[in-house]
Length: 629
Ligand SMILES: Nc1ncnc2c1ncn2[C@@H]1O[C@H](COP(=O)(O)OP(=O)(O)OP(=O)(O)O)[C@@H](O)[C@H]1O
Image (tube, rainbow, N blue to C red; front, side):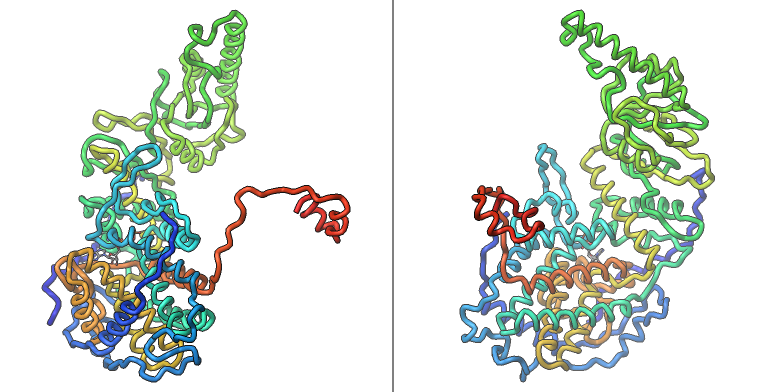
């Protein structure tokens, strides 16, 4: 059956943007018999299903990659499940646990699998465009509604070391590539589950590790050959970013994708390189999302304190992480200043601050950004000296400015050795609200702000995160423009390839290839489950298309879709990094046999002098063990 009709592909346009003057303790075992039976059954299904379908044309074939039409004509090899496994004596036929190996259960991996399963069960429902959201309630009582795996993982406090490893790995993936967080968690869990079956079947951890290394190498070698299109150097990147952005936005995905594409495009260096840090995302409550704008320079939410409201030429900025005024600027002369001595001290402090402000002006500082209370008299002095005073609302903003302007955050009112320099600092109105802009004179601004508008802070935070994901995705594409078929098509294509190759291999490698294939195909299965489809039959049908060589068939809302026609793409670099990270972790976890937890509070015991002399055989030992053991 051919895949359902789909919308025509989006045609990428060459962009011509103007450069603007721009848990849990885990201790569980699984019903291993049923899982093993299921594994064998699915392997048989994967091996024998095969339906030939006409393939659809991809959007573009470049960088020496094969076209889909070529691939669909590739002869499909019928695979068979191993009937005669040449494995060590501990292995019984059919992945069954050898009774002689009773008592030798790889307990640690079992618990690691259970830990990963618990973590995956939290993330699974969020995977893909039909994933669900979760309410995250922070320790401060702030509630966020999100489907971002990275945000959910960050909020989890995990106990089991394996779960923490997976959490860290997924977060690193999110930080490095801006995508593939859920992919990392789900694939790790699926691979650990398969590893557990293989250990039950009798492979030793060392054999399993070796076999997984071979299977990983096979997958990573095959992956680039599945990249059927790439982002051209002068192309509007919207189409390539859409899949990444759409899974992170509930509404206005198209608008946000275009906004990010435009910001990324403008920020590109003339040589085509791109620095994600050159884009600043600023959220401003009010209006609707489509009121969002791209502005050259850095926008921050801040309050102007004095009468000097702009510096329109040669702004020299100092940043202060302290009150702008004497240390107790508020409640003056009422509650705190209860004695003449205190009043004298306060006056002295005020005079001292006034001198410091005058010194700032003498050193050429004309903009002071402050995180802390601002004293009115000190602001008067700043006005008198021609210093513009801006009070920022959050530490995040002042740290951001410090980073971008390359100026240190000072804990006293002192002139910095080198001020932060920009052309202009001024207030810009946005409807009822306003932002403080730091602008540069250069034709191509070194920084660009995406100002997001919206009625709720929660909605804006979600949009902000989606924009950051889009920027990171573009950064990945600047390093490698190749794209893979999305919607689970790549995972299924890799799984088919592994099943084919594994069926021709004997021993642990054959089994590991098939187990790896099984783990990979769990990802399109999750997409189908989250879309509310009959996952097993969708998977079987999809496997058939792929066996026939049509590897652009993925999982859509209503069933199978041609991802090339639908424009659903995954970034090759992101997927490769995710696969590498996951397989590295799994190879490590399968060889762990114990968890050793260090004492939380060290108990020191004084060793008698005589025993000390006997035990401390060298000065080094004495240094480390000293008087204590
Ligand atoms: N419109 C779509 N239809 C079907 N599948 C899609 C669509 N858009 C994206 N996908 C697929 O969804 C999967 C990615 O889902 P998701 O973004 O939730 O996971 P992730 O990238 O691993 O995690 P995260 O985005 O939270 O870091 C990919 O396989 C991608 O191809």
